[in-house]
Amino acid sequence: MVASESDSPVEQPKTTTPATATTTTNTTKAPSCPMKAWPRAIQHIDRKDLYTNLEDRIHYLHTFLDFSSNDIEALISGSKYIKALIPAVVNIVYRKLLQYDITARAFQTRSTSFEGPLDEFPSEDSPQIMHRKMFLKGYLIKLCSDPSKMEFWEYLDKVGMMHVGQGREHPLHIEYIHIGACLSFIQDTFTEAILSHPRMQLHRKIALVKALGKVIWIQNDLFAKWYVRDGDEYSDEYVNKVEIEREGYLHGKKIVNDSDDSAMDSSG
Image 1 (cartoon, rainbow, N blue to C red):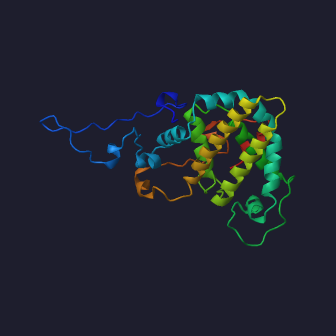
Image 2 (image 1 turned 180 degrees about the horizontal axis):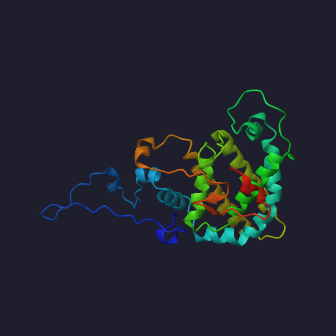
């Protein structure tokens, strides 16, 4: 069942219902759009808004995925379990990334498309890997914060932007195939750990896995929007001023916090 606008966890833009045109004799004209003749209610989604307005895009994804206050409650009540898993998940993720030369090269060249000669590949204990682990830890903790605020989704959108060479003093270019694979791996790792938790009740496990999965898939979309060319015809109408900011910051405000993130403050 699709969530109603009243169930939406983020304040939503107002939508209007097209008025039915009538003649001077008060008779109804035939619908100009075949969809209006469908024998069931159907919600209109403005395609242009999906590509020019982040809040409208998030609203559409929320309603399509039935992301509601129930998911927010599951994330908030389950955040202590997720946070306890994060250190192990971070190590597992970076162990996976360092298994392949194409993903490991990004930690030296800041690009997965570079194919020239490299120095020795970094290890899990290399300074740059330890630094990246701290950022991933802070990012995953951010996923446990309040998704009812638009700031939450703005930051996830900014994370996508920063992987296509924008918004950073030192650009980073990670091809989308690796982004999608990594997000899937993170989701799979969390799902296994949550479902095998010895003290959490089954209904809470299910609710938490579903809610976290929706957030990760919305994050996947907010990565994809910076890579795919869908909606390019509206690019001239969407003026998006890219700010160069440090990692963990949004509009000059630090929103990713971690007790061990002092090194993040020195990054570009």
